[in-house]
Image 1 (cartoon, helix red, strand yellow):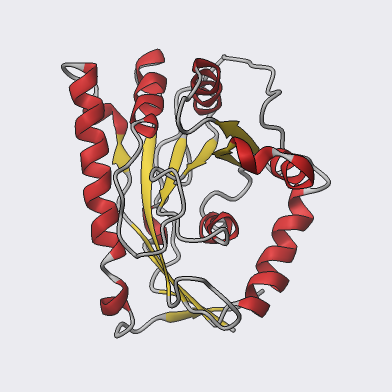
Image 2: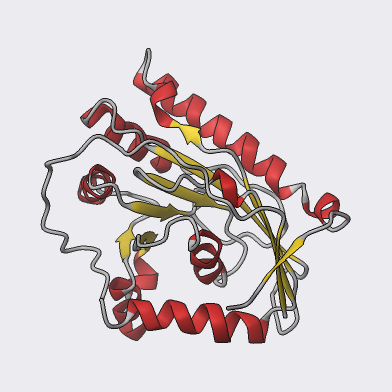
Length: 255
């Protein structure tokens, strides 16, 4: 298998203002003995064995510092492994925190999900507790992964986004002006609706959206505008697959 990327230099951004906010992180805990080997096995064994080619564009658009929300389209359960691989060179040293559905936090799978940074959300009736936890993580400068469509869609179309990602990011920015929350849109395209062995993947990373640009005026209108702008970018990224296949890529060594 070959990994490709047209650029792999991360965007340098100013360090965020020091936050003295401390929180007992009890709902999303990254295990220091489980997380590192899990990511290494995924990056060097599982992904290389399963997929044909993974092509990535726009890694330079992932800021290397500050609180981030990675907002990928959701096309398969493989997305949860591909997002860390895509961001690993830019979010080095950061433990990604995944907002996942309650069903994914049940049983043995839930045991692993929680120890790899996942925390549950009721997508139909999000609780204020989940919102507060997400805000606290951003205040600590963490990187969150939120699938804004809410569910897996295999038709290649970007479906209406849930309003939660805008509400969460704006709540964090309003809680501490100058926090510098950014949302990074990511389009994931598989060569087959149901990925199997040898499937190719195109991953396109868009320009980071500065949440502070949406803090003037009505909160409701700001959230609506932010959601609409994110949806627009995700649609553009999802339509790049055919163009990317004709582009020349620099090979990333699988090391």
